Length: 215
Image 1 (cartoon, one colour):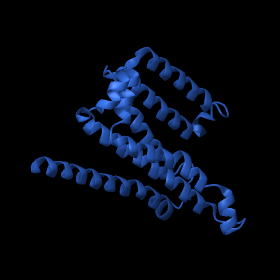
Image 2 (spheres, helix red, strand yellow; image 1 turned 90 degrees about the vertical axis):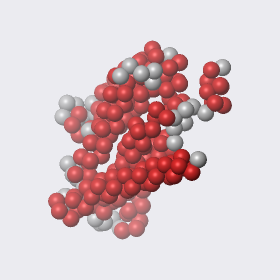
Image 3 (cartoon, helix red, strand yellow; image 1 turned 30 degrees about the vertical axis):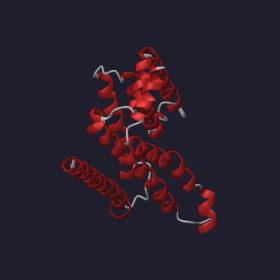
Image 4 (cartoon, helix red, strand yellow; image 1 turned 180 degrees about the vertical axis):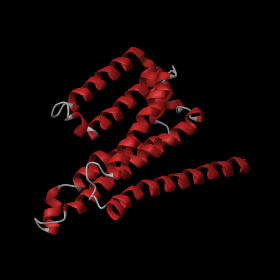
């Protein structure tokens, strides 16, 4: 019993250390942009590129999982589709070269395809989602998404910065805070996915939830 508890604590410590290292690395992107490149966190900054790479890695992970023919294909496809839509939105400047606002049509196409695959998989999609949602890493994923989709947007609203710093404030400061918050949120999502990838096989859906699912 003591050995099991020790191994559990050791794994959690390892997770904490790995997460700390990853957060330190991604935060370093901001230091590069501000202190080395002096680009004010522009659209082509290392910070923006880092966000896109992180989301692309998450998409690739779930794509590979979905392609392996597991019973969770429908669930993994839905999750991949969600993050792929986020990536498309992050790359809106690229899609604007085709037509302004065209990223929306690409995102909608991805959405319809992923939903269709999920529906085709039937109940296995629901079971896969339950398995993912009940895994401990899901809480970190939700925290990351809230940071990206809500906190960074509200914290970056111009009305706050105008009130605090006046109309002629340095916009680079606002960009650093907003994009830094997004980067942190995406990093949390990546940590969550790494956590899930290493421990998903050992995760069992709680009996109470599984019984309701089977009903």
